Image 1: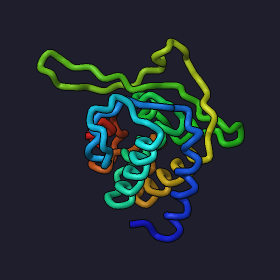
Image 2 (image 1 turned 90 degrees about the vertical axis):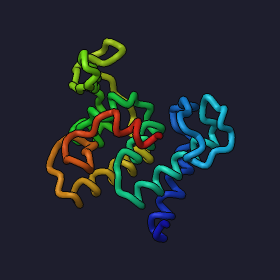
Image 3 (image 1 turned 120 degrees about the vertical axis):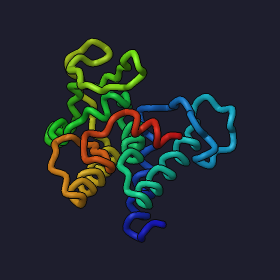
Length: 178
């Protein structure tokens, strides 16, 4: 459950989500989030709010920043591969933007084993795009940085695996959604 301060911050955050750039996202497992329409293909505004609330509560309970990554996805509209390739230094608060320079690319070898690499070529072919930092994005960024500091993380990667301390991969986000 929330402390008074967290509840206040979360209430402010969920109010701000209403203006998020993503109006709908493909629903994967609606029952886990307490959503009633199991045949839904896309999250409605109310379902997005429920998902965000559940992700934030789950982060506060178990401390896995993959749940904050999901919220950030809603807030600024990044692809998951772009999200897990973010570095703390990509956030330019003076200019008010997140610089997107790279993305994670996943491939499988003949045995089916997945490998992950960082590409500096974005999916749309551009070398960089800039996304405005919303108030919610800023709040989530601060939560992630504070969690990384609490765990003694010194990497410039924003999303760090709680299991091994390496950069978080897109499959961690996928697993959080299951």
